[in-house]
Length: 153
Image (cartoon, rainbow, N blue to C red; front, side, top):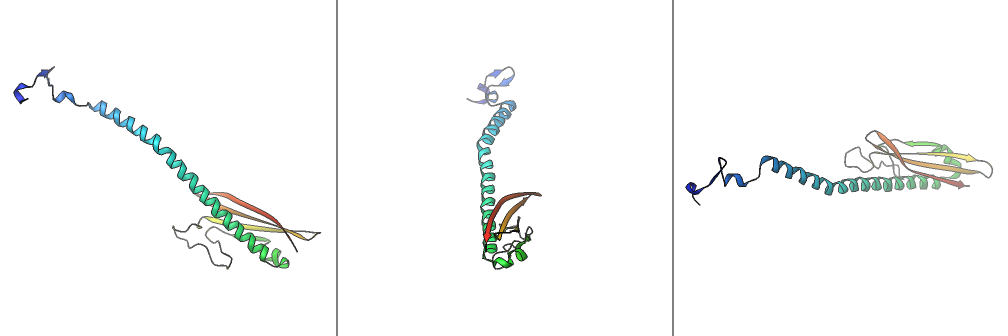
């Protein structure tokens, strides 16, 4: 069909009128965006659940490590060394006393803090040790793990 053979319909060329209007294209984009967001939403919430699980696992490891340190300490020195013990955020140490973290964005332990309290019960001369690990995310500090144990002489 050449240019001279085009039929005119209400003042417009029939070939030019066969495409989508702007309103139809915008409506199609809105429907596509709604469908894409409903498909991607579970992936975003799944990532948040995975991150929380990772934080809880690391917190359990940190709490267990500190409890093992307390148990390995001679009974007579537990109260002196761990009566009120605090490792602030960014200053968490391993068993040898070396910091787990260097304050950079890549460290997995950078937002963790842990503390311990030990109380003596007489008689039968038991010590109750409690270790708690907290995670600070966006200025919200959440206690993730708390362990308690009785230690005998």
